[in-house]
Length: 134
Length: 92
Image 1 (cartoon, rainbow over the protein chains, first blue to last red):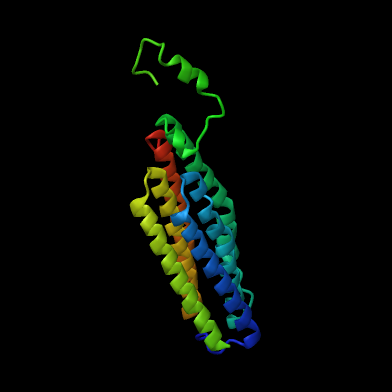
Image 2 (cartoon, rainbow over the protein chains, first blue to last red):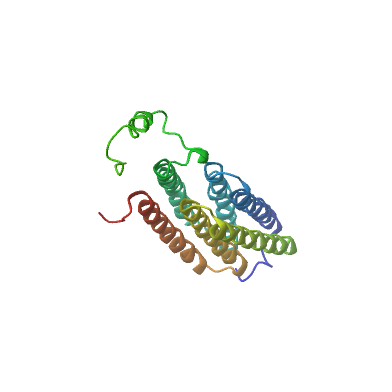
């Protein structure tokens, strides 16, 4: 189990392949985070990093340690389950905060719409005598 | 086959590090605060994957616990930051 030199070839090939694919997908996700234009497009970039890239690397790690230690080492399943549970929660929280802040700042070009909920308030605001009210 | 595995581990390390650099760039130039929070969350995830790849490289299980800790702390910090952006305070 000492080092990667004495891993058999039938195990080294899938580990190398999974690492290659996972690392490429992680890079593509981060590139999407940097290159896309608006925030609501940009939030889709890290999703591929967290699900597919992390999944590939976790499966590679599981396979490597199972073969290298000649026993079943699957405690990477903990990380996988945790990521699959928390990634939608985090994504939803950031998205809700972004929509809330964009609507609050009246940033119409950001892409967030209130679905016509706040149009009544928008129409009433100029007529109302209190200018400081939201 | 071992050289192939070494090559692929090196490629994975370089890719994850470049991804972390891209996330740091978005963290620096992000026009709004939620962009920065999203970039920080992706940076946590890339750090966790870097720990996993290093665990494969050195063949020890220590990096697994590092990855678990990074995932847990990253989730909690991102939730706290998103809640701060939403409400202006974390614990109400």
